[in-house]
Length: 247
Ligand SMILES: [Fe+2]
Image (cartoon, rainbow, N blue to C red; front, side):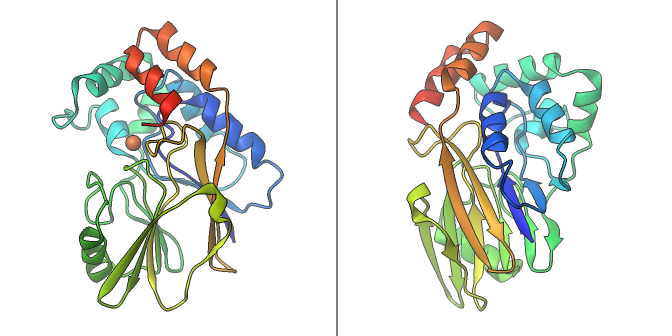
């Protein structure tokens, strides 16, 4: 089974469209979307409609922004810019699309034998999984062979090997990375719509469950169009500026 893994699209329809265009000829069986479809970017309806209409079988879970946009939570931990974007997004979404976002399931979700997806961490959808200590706690509590996560917007590979954990920040030049059958993995493909690793290109990942390998990818997309849409929508200009630097 070959999976296309997308996360943290954040209303950036230009980035999402570019990823789907470049992967259209790939032999893929399923698409996994790890949450934060909306929030920050100016194309929330476009993104939700693209995800709803994907031709391949697709599993989608919610992210923290989806939850706050859908008014399932009040966004207490959000900064003012994020809250402004949330309010704009809630108002901009059509009734149907808002309902779709509201109904997105909470992770973690098992999507295949030994394969799960979550937004922040399998233990807490709002947790930023950044350290080897956090990863070790996950490996001890939820020992799934491969769990894909998002939320940090940084392409990352945690490898659990009994009592120790290795961490590696992923790069598009890494190519295909084989995963060992006797280890546990937490893998973040990086963000489609708002990368934060100082590489502004859209990030996505291919996971091949037969060869048990992941391949990180980065692609250019019409970034200036995404920026212009944000400015035209009256969203905070910093949301347009940050796209260009990948922070
Ligand atoms: Fe996010």
